[in-house]
Amino acid sequence: MKRECGPTLLTSPRTIAADAAGIAEAARILRHGGLVALPTETVYGLAADAASDAAVARIYAAKARPKFNPLIAHVTCLEAALGQGLFSADALRLAEAFWPGPLTLVVPLAPGATVCAASRAGQQNIALRVPIHPVALAVISAVGRPLAAPSANRSGRMSPVTAAHVARDFAGEIDLILDGGRCPVGLESTIIACLEEPPRLLRPGGIARKDIEAVLGHALGEPAGAGPVRSPGMSRSHYAPRAKLRLGAATLDNGEAGLDFGGIFGAAQNVLDLSPGQDLAEAAANLFSFLRELDAREAACIAVAPIPCEGLGEAINDRLARAAAPRDTHSIAKVGN
Ligand code: TXA
Ligand code: MG
Image (cartoon, rainbow, N blue to C red; front, side, top):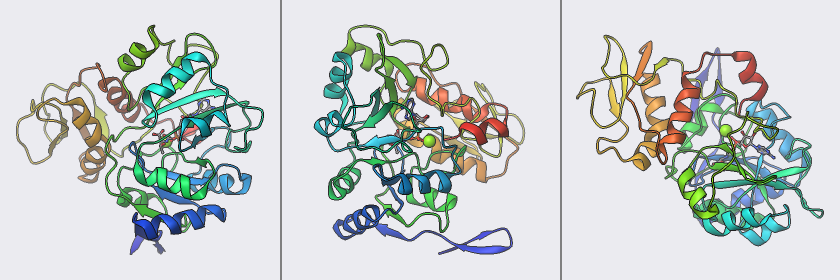
């Protein structure tokens, strides 16, 4: 497949099905220091051997991601995570409740950890996640080492939830795309820093705050920005679509495209409804692909219907606010994911 990019034609990365042969090929490439985009339950990740400074350097280069923005290390189970990080009682409780699944825990680095300094951006703590997607688990298990994997988009762009989305962002910089269909959750993992008491919410995501607080038995600390622990990649302006976004819109203005929720805009050609039945999980799963689709229709502005802030709505509203924030290209270049 070819795609046009300025005056030259660039070859899209090789894409193969995520069957047994595809998983074996992905593992072979990863063991040799290559880059493979693969599905997780949240979004597609751009994976490399987390123990290899050289392989991880290729992730930063391919994404044009600043080197001070650390990566999540993906492992197959809690036992593997315990080899990389030191878990407090709260961290253990969360891991036992939500792994495998869309939760990332930031914990102090364990003494014998094998995840390289480049993957951690030199920090003495580490972000760890056990995905539940069978393809992601099979690839990590076949490689036999933790995989560093940021979302498989160029820095500052929207996260990909299909193999085709990944192919639009990359050409020869990555070695393979493993096509495992659409990512079911559609939003990135929730990130909790377990470095102090109480644990802090660094990024709302695929697991709702209330479910995490129910397991902890107390409230989470303030989000990133309110204290010393920050998630370096949580820039205000991110996920930048080409169109402007008008959030909390009750009606559709002339010429606008509409990202609806619960059918308030009525049926119109330029409207996509995240969830006609107001189901927040369905809305999360559709969010990035609908935003991309509406953006491609070339309206100057996308009106977005109000979405309640409860449950997964917190993460959906967080991503929409970032997509709507004034473009600060400098800050995207500095801290984009
Ligand atoms: O669902 C997900 O989390 C996806 C899939 C592929 O697993 N990954 C993902 O990675 O969203 P990325 O790199 O796009 O976003 C990870 C975020 C960044 O904002 C980064 O700054 C933060 O996690 N992060 C990574 N390590 C950290 C650390 N040690 N301390 C604080 N924040 C960290
Ligand atoms: Mg990202």
